[in-house]
Amino acid sequence: MRITFSIIALTALAACGGGQPSGAISRACEASGRPGANASLCSCVQGAADATLSGSEQRRAAKFFKDPQKAQDTRQGDGTSAFWNRYKAFADRAEAICR
Image 1: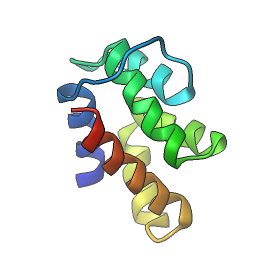
Image 2: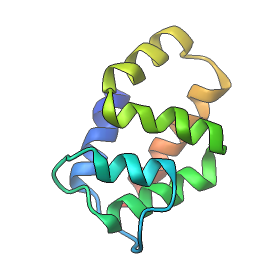
Image 3: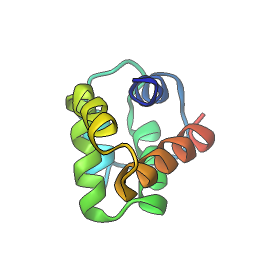
Image 4: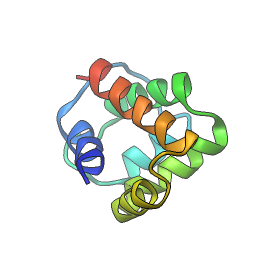
């Protein structure tokens, strides 16, 4: 649950980068409707995703923006998987660079 809230807080509070959304994560970020989710922030978050997640992992993670419960379910059911470990690395990286 803490990871889910970290992602939500990240999209609401952080800001960096620039440019137009160009990947699954940035599109999901902008479409989320969360306060603070703008092209600059979402582009930064996409950069963190590009550095840590494969394309298919990005598409899987993008679904978490629309349905945060899906992230919680994934963590609980798949908490030690390679995907979840890379997802956590992505979230940590995005939080660190997109402030």
